[in-house]
Length: 216
Ligand code: SF4
Ligand code: SF4
Image (cartoon, rainbow, N blue to C red; front, side, top):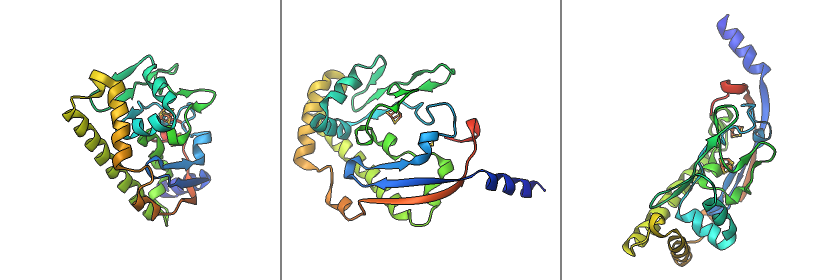
């Protein structure tokens, strides 16, 4: 009886979700249509998070949209560490937390490619994107990207440490030299990323649960 009820409930809640994988090299991201009407029903979903920026993020932003860096540094609550900066979430009206870049009215204020990697890659477990047939190539792609980006971040921070630079002591110079190093040694669209499709869409049918039942 319990099994039948569980199956019925699952079927009743089935919804179609569109997932789009965007290959933009080191600015790749995963789009999920469910985010427009997040089942958490709290107008922030997974954006209770502290976005955290590393050398690759700063290198990209420095070249493409340096004003974003100014906005990051002007937030009322940030934590500056030697190798990264996090924009610390603030307490929300509901007693939970909300990212400082998230508003009730418009969601995230940044275009996807301007976000840090967790914000570009994360899709909540209820969407079970890696269980869908055909997504294995994208799992491989995003895992590779994660490792690749971490290696570059490590290499840039290590090189700048030999020059006596870190974000805590001199953020401006750290970011400037990180961007130069990145330009000299790497590419936003590395050759291996070009071997993967540019974009691919999937339609997933998943049972949806609401409020706190929808896990993050
Ligand atoms: S919790 Fe899931 S559906 Fe909601 S905003 Fe985050 S990724 Fe989108
Ligand atoms: S930066 Fe944007 S996507 Fe990332 S947690 Fe904040 S509001 Fe969400």
